[in-house]
Amino acid sequence: MWTFFALDDLYELREIRELAISPDGSKVLYVERQFGCGQDHSFDNLWLVSTEGSGEPLRLTQGLWNDCCPIWKP
Image (cartoon, rainbow, N blue to C red; front, side, top):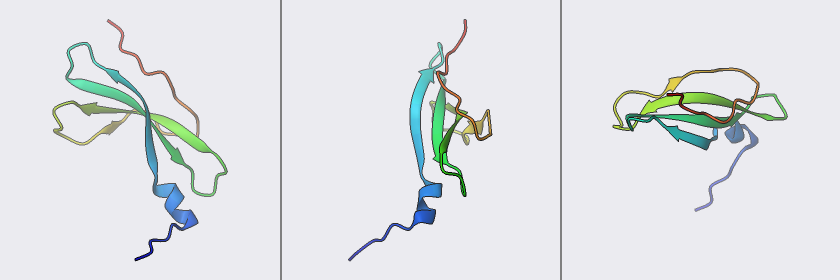
């Protein structure tokens, strides 16, 4: 059976690019890349999630820019 990939499917793709685990190991800060609908470029935003797998990821930034290099400060 053939599966076709439509151009609009590209806007649904997400890529995890960079990770930073919290010092206590309870959370992960990460950069998620996606393509903007109607845009000809991608953008990266920061997300936070529990390492226990509980709860939904929390979006920390939202916009058509490129956040990068997540880091935890002591």
